[in-house]
Length: 136
Length: 90
Image 1 (tube, each protein chain N blue to C red):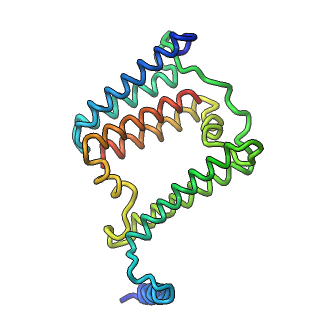
Image 2: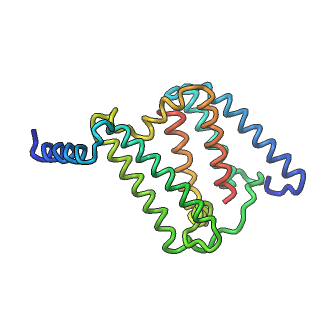
Image 3: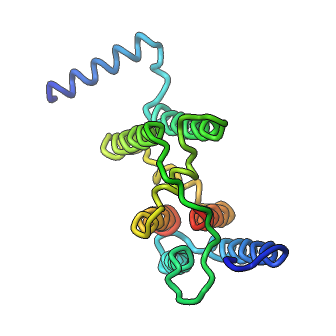
């Protein structure tokens, strides 16, 4: 999508979305802890990273705006504090017992992502996140 | 039983009795913690998007972290790990 303009860019974006949605529905069929699920994540992840980091010579990369020249000063520490609190809470849940009374995010997401359509939606959110990051 | 464990149990029981939260399980409290953190993240992002906010938005923070190739690679490896962990391995 890097060098396209106007309607061409819109069509390319729609095509990327359709491809991501199709892939998500397909990959959602793969149960976790199986080789197909690992291959699906590995293939999609590698493709997005290769595109975002322009690892393929002459292939169009993402259209990016200028990078911010500062992190936002002390305000960025609020995000760091939130991350630290989450990490602490997650570690507490990980090491506390019994495990059932202190579930980690992974333990909670397991049953939540069990249905095929939930997993397909999660694939789409993950891919959308990767594509969103590539434009930063 | 270890002295610290007894002290911890007694303290928890004391707090539970004082706050009348005996019917609230540890599981509920743990989940409530995650929900609270998720709500705080949404509120922080909403505040950061207001004009003149002193906190950077998540997009700006990501853009700053990814301003060079290594930072970009690091952020993308973290993104990849999220997919690997939640979609393939758990």
